[in-house]
Length: 532
Ligand code: BES
Ligand code: MN
Ligand code: ZN
Image (tube, rainbow, N blue to C red):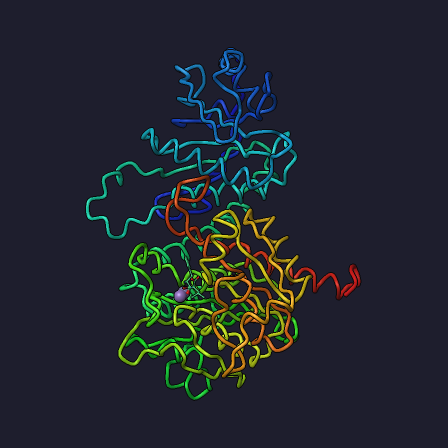
């Protein structure tokens, strides 16, 4: 093999989260000093092309041989290590399967990027170089490839080890990933993609950490502190309301839940002014922040109750999405509102049969104190409307029923505006987070009819996720509104792709993408490119 002269190396570190730093270099693949060089292969390809072909040639056809022998198939995430014995500078070549070519997209890159760094970590290899998957013959935008590689690697390596006193594999962290791209223009795009992907992954990790923290740590007050940290870093406006202020404002539904605990409740308000001269260009992100859900007087059974430390995942997602929005700065005003309290069966807890009055004056009969999410959200939605918000997206671990209906593969989405529902689903297609719509037919309103109040907070056994949404719809006062039920998707039971056990960070990336997309749509409408 004729040695090519290494091009000027740009070793500018572009990103670092925890142990891992990712950088980009313009050097020849076979000339890079690394313990492992990652190349790729689509499923069923018999003769590699592009960068993989160049490396195969330098290795005297070793990759082709392994394909012929059936050891390399190219299935998604398949990782095959080949030692190079000095034939080229990299000590090993790792052939990474990309799966079928017709199914290849950025989501595949996120997944395989996570799989490959975890594979290397298991092998005790702490650094590697990789080609930018899809950016070569794949024809994908190099920035998107860099972004997906960064998101996949950071999210896939994530561990929540705060409370592990002997951290056995801390000596065995994966520390350094170099994306190799010889074309300087492409390398530059990859750098910007990695920057964005790192910011996005960092925010998703903010949410994961908050959700994984036990409830004795992640109290409403500490959620407010976490929001304050994000606000300070991203220069967002922040306001935190306490029980007395909320009572005064008439948030009787939220306060009914909050009266069962000694832990002070917080309404956390984050403000990003991306288009201050156009207040009508706005988006409200409303999060359920129940830092622990015992069920209250309608106490939950003990089995699995520990999972209810994650009942603030909606609130955490909103805080984390605001972190990304503060970083990417879309031209839209975004208000984040998080209703944070515990749901405890304290001596002054609300009782089944109590009637509470929300900020908009509507009354709710509390049939079941465990249907607390819709109560706190009712007042948070009213608050956002009061602030002039006309587009609302609420995020909540709202119902066990959504897990029965959809499992953990997708988030349940409901709403009163088809366009906003579709825009959210479309944003999810870009981020790889899936949504599935449930109907909001008028007939379902009957489920929450009460004899003593305007509505009741539990619709019984039928269509549990929909009846919960029907109640929320009573508090949006004519605004466009979408409801995301993340009870299934906010946590994972297994390691798969860039998800690990525990908190997933869903739907942080989609919320931020939606803000970007809505800002772009408004700009396009203004310039007459698309109609209203
Ligand atoms: N936080 C729960 C919903 C939940 C269940 C989240 C499982 C994550 C995993 C919510 O507050 C709740 O208790 N909902 C009740 C509503 C019922 C009482 C009408 C439910 O789903 O059983
Ligand atoms: Mn509950
Ligand atoms: Zn709950």
